[in-house]
Image (cartoon, rainbow, N blue to C red):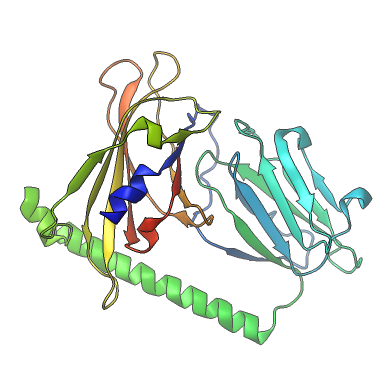
Length: 303
């Protein structure tokens, strides 16, 4: 059961998302490398970069920045960041927000290019989120070559193809919801002869972050089959059920979740949270779909 052995190695990093003032809805988020061309006009809208405490955000520029000692990078509320570094070539900027830091107002990041050509600088808003982090953003100041544009078009076409596959799968699941119980699972391709396998996790196999604000009661892993997205592919559906207690006796809510592999790849997950059965106690279930190869690594789960 490789998927179950993988889940046993989960590294739990749990944080409570506290209530905040009303804010405009965030931009749509998806994991992976984001390509961000800069507007030649300084009056354009300031783009957002999404950052999560303790997770490194790498911003790669096609044009070198001035060195840090020459003011090439300015970060508001610098004390909230554990790391702000720029490589020797001035092209790769790394930002790490300190654990537990979730500013109410997005700090502003301003970078200054070394060549002095227009635009001489660029600004970004660093939007902090407890789970949905960007890990790699490629910023383009110069016009991109035809080769780069074609490669990006191929990436977008592959994203569109995956969306269509996911849409068809969602439609099939919706049409199958009339069948309840095990028949419903089978009709959705989620039940094979292996059934749904479960295993309770031994706390000694889990590593919890020092800044963890939640008390972990129980942890159980579920694994079932998943329909292939292409011929010859073998996929699994994996879910982790956690019994958690928040700080204090009040109710709390998981605002989102992020599952990252050891290599830094971020997986899209579905989150379900039960009503509180006792003051402060609740169940949270996080589910994702992986290939069998992907499921053999170590993962970090952050709520």
